[in-house]
Length: 422
Ligand code: LLP
Image (cartoon, rainbow, N blue to C red; front, side, top):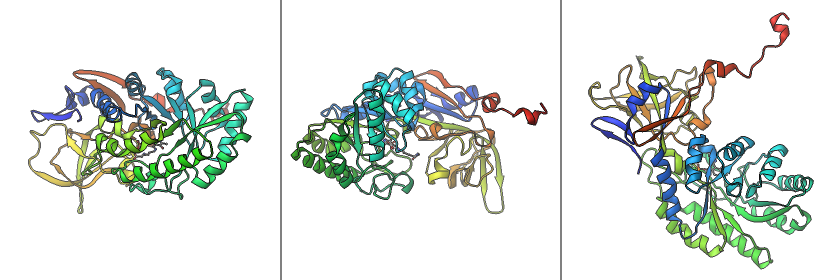
């Protein structure tokens, strides 16, 4: 279920007219539905209730404080990957024991900060990192909990840039090396290995890759048990796919039916790190048509959002549905167009050769499914101010990040005195 729908030819987000939001707040504008966000979180939580898992929302998908607070208030934990994300988690008052920390490249400073905050555990990605966490913990006179991130070498059947659980990827530790780490664990007295972690990729639409990975990991856990090594946690990562186009991703219930029996057998506390599943279809990017341009080969709809606002089409050739915010009083019929932004790159597009209802200058378009990896991957390229973000709760609208100003763009820059003739 999501709360973006047409009523009387107008696109609504909950009870707010998207076209009116665009008029009021300007474009490009990210619009989030509070109820869709919470509903997706609850859907997963309810489907997995037999496990009573800790669902750590993956902050990288969308790190706006308002969204984080909404989810944490519903019982979510957070999956963070940097000092910045940890700072956000702390700002919204996420209990430290609901925070897990991943990343192949944690710095000493980040590790120390997370230890001091007493997070639940680190997902560790290499022996070198484990030794480093041990060293820093010893200096701080602490014993730090960690989970070993396993690279189970399974094919998640998704885009190659978001495949993470193959041995050719930089992530995790293969089973043999993990076994070696467990055999050496007594040498590292300031870390306690309490769990295993896997995250095999993103936008995974089938359950088979999860089952394959979970089976491999549970066999490994059984092997550890035989050696007298007991764990507490199994973190199965994120990656659940959503509908952008015509995908038929597994629902939360279908996923649960397949994985719960496997996970229950482990007797371990289960953790998940979903991002896209929760926030992806909770947000849209609204943009205004600036110009229509016909060339001998094509028709371009030039809009005021660019690849700096939503990079997924440019980076992964990702498909996002594009809907006009009103369906009446537009040019009749449909036509094949490229929807492109104003940025000086040919990769700056949202759709290519897409059949859309005829639009004209001044119309608004909604780029759907932009809640995950939309704003969080946005940039100031071409010295463009990052978009405003609003959250809709029924008929109430809240600005959750105001549009940047030109001054914001240069605030951290300085011109050396010699260039100023001083
Ligand atoms: N856990 C770990 C360790 C991760 O690396 C990720 C995502 C997640 C959880 C959450 O994955 P999700 O449930 O959202 O699939 N920018 C790309 C996606 C990159 C995913 C990075 N890691 C995109 O726009 O498709």
